[in-house]
Image (spheres, one colour):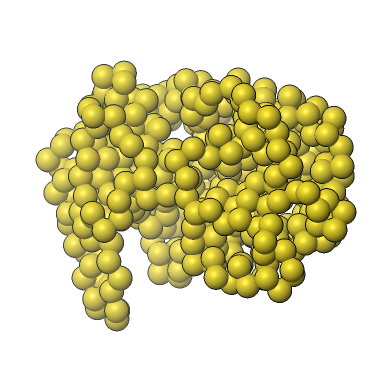
Length: 369
């Protein structure tokens, strides 16, 4: 098949990783894959693509001021997307993330193409999209051949609020090595340094257990706008010397293989790759039980732990329980590794291929499950 994939950039992020993995998977099958990003060279690609994947950059992601400048820039995005997609003449177009989905659906009006929009976060609680884009989403999502939510609760919301043909496909688990490293007394967190990821809650919880577990350290992988404020928080709590914020790394799975405990403290998610990959690497995982995602992966007490969102005390308690019990951490880690079969890349990608082949049948089958 000839497929176009659209996203803002291939910088660091869960959606960017999934799209790159999907592009590479289909390219190795001999499909003709084109990845279009709204951004240009100002945002370097973090995730490598197979040599056979065609890569197009629109270079239109810059900030604009004022209503008319923003309108003009978005019209340019629509026009350039339409031009590039028309030239490729694909069998299908898949767009990732809410604003890009709206732009892509507008760009492909009257082109006779099957366009699939993929929501990457829970739209019911994500307020970052803005009012205008939210209204447009409600109008144009019904034009999509299907809108993909990563969990059923998201698909139900999309059906109710956007009258979309909404289906559920979770993230595929990329191929990962088996864990070989010795587990260290390290609490690991991976994710952007912004409010959504809740690293402030994690740092406060770690500070509460530090006196009891003074030989443990906290390592945070990721970059973002809250780096300075998180560092100041660690300083104010007296733990800055044992909190390492190491920025972005190319091999987070190797850190997951070494970590004694992996914690995801997000306030909202779509379907957290970090939780899935950490479980696949045999780590004991604690995650906040935000509305969408973590409870699809973790059965509390069986293969990981779930705690309420923004609850420092409950997170600190769960961390202390596992930090004190190596045997329990090992048991949870072993149970967690069954995630490798449940979300194996080939299995999840077969769902995408069935959807691309016939979205109507896919939706009917899903309803009857």
